[in-house]
Image 1 (cartoon, rainbow, N blue to C red):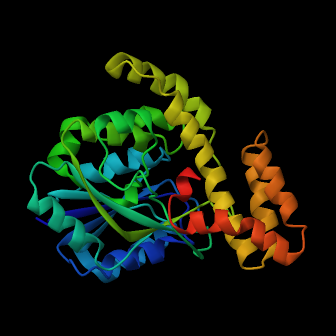
Image 2 (image 1 turned 45 degrees about the horizontal axis):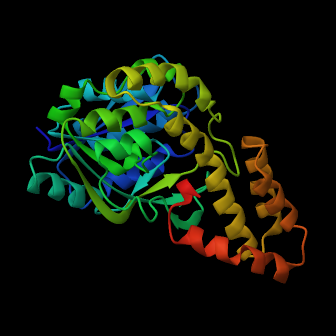
Length: 324
């Protein structure tokens, strides 16, 4: 039985899945299996995974399902897995070589931890590094249950290693959140996992998280407001708190990352990229004045635009783009 089961839900991921699989195969820790769940893809995802399976033998298995969303894919992969620890890697993200070695060591050292997670470097949808990380000041520690209930904590599924017994005890991911909001099921999952035990945190970015909505849009931008009516009742009943702060923060997150992209582009003198990023931020949040001011900044002379963007750009580079 492998120590770690790496579960990769994939939907129309033909442009990224090879890099993701290569990053798993190249780990310094090699006691793992790979369960790739094809979520009803209509592109070449299945063919690419099958080619890797032929090269990897029994170490990599392909599981197929009708399109049901990432939560169902992760749960389906877990049902087909045997590892003591579970890693849920998205099909457009990549690990650094020591990811499993570092995270396994943390869980092995403390049996009370329900999971361990790391910081994440950010890249755009084409894999271009954004020179910033996900976790910023004030979030650079393992969260309490209160913090998870009141603040959107910067944990990505691809950045976590989960203890199987804790996953099974909490019931896994809630499939019903699929219809409410793409990607909100992970916020729910962290809360349920925190009930099973404390988290461990590694400050080093051991994964690169790909921002799927710029410059090419690899996924449909979700309407997170639809999650409120589903998640609100659950949090009110179980904890007596509102889901509104979490839903609002998740709604703002794409805008924040687009701002980080635009500010970096201005710093680098790439007006076209900066203008496109700020314009996308306006579409995400048309009521925020700062989006328009930043877009207008791209028409100023280079030196003035760079000076105006300098402080914000330095803050973005220091981490915490998710909370900009």
